[in-house]
Image 1 (cartoon, rainbow, N blue to C red):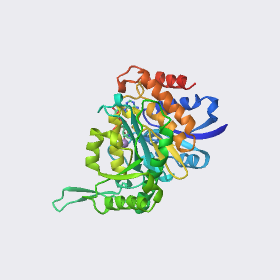
Image 2: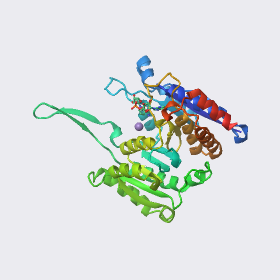
Image 3: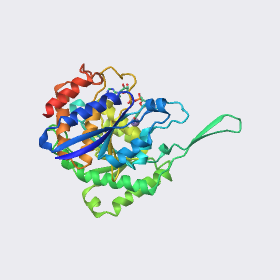
Image 4: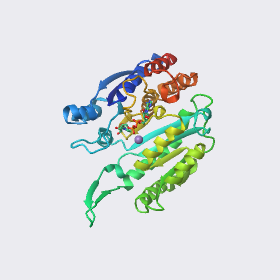
Length: 363
Ligand code: NAD
Ligand code: MN
């Protein structure tokens, strides 16, 4: 059997409830899948910052880089106001480990979606630049009133990497999806990639993003033959995603648009507590639920562990273990179909009850 070492970074709030749940599910994988796990706890987060003055210890970066085959991150409670010396550890981790794409599958059967339409999208969010470089300054206008300015960086390099990943995933993901639970919609036509941008207004930045991804496509015969390429302005993208989510397959977006679109897509499938993600680079993958630290429900056994559990499966899938990943996806789908769900989905089950049911379904 393969032994995989995973770094666990629960960080803040319900991260401390859903990461142990994901760990329990990984440990429940039957031996037929030939994977075993070592888990290494790693510190990070706002609470760690308040205790020690650092949100992301160097030791966490070193441990992940040198000792781990992958990682699972929970969530951080980043304050909305500026706190001296603090900056978000998840944004820093993505940068340190060069996890340049955040891959967010949003999947639900017809009957489970808000719109009554099935959803089966893969949102690929560029993870390293755009407005999230956090180059913000505040100055004063001539009349003395405050002016805040943010820099938005788009590079050919990052756009090309995001585009390549979108086309590769469009080609590959169908093999795992075809084996998923029956009843789930499957993309019928050619794989499709939709570029999201706003280059009608931001012609230089979003223009570079769009042109670069189009160029990746135009210069690759395999992509041209096997993948359809479309584009959508980000505002009408939101509209169409709510009206007709079934028309989208792989969607590739700059960092900020991708962040907003994927939280919105989570509403389509009923809860943020269902949607997983993986931060993917060329040499490392870190699973991470899309939701935040949810301070409003922490410590009450109300957190939906499914997003974190699916993130563990997505991690396995992206480091070359599709079979145990598929087993976890299927066990989760089965438990959801039984109606054993947490309060965010209208149920009464606790975090632990849902986790136990998924483990039982796996074995
Ligand atoms: P949030 O995702 O934490 O919560 C939004 C709403 O969804 C809340 O009502 C919450 O109870 C609910 N929710 C989220 N996850 C759930 C789950 N697993 N089960 C059941 N319900 C769930 O977003 P927010 O309230 O905007 O932010 C709270 C904190 O999280 C902030 O400090 C923010 O900075 C941080 N945050 C962190 C990340 C991250 O770590 N990547 C992402 C988003 C927000
Ligand atoms: Mn978000």
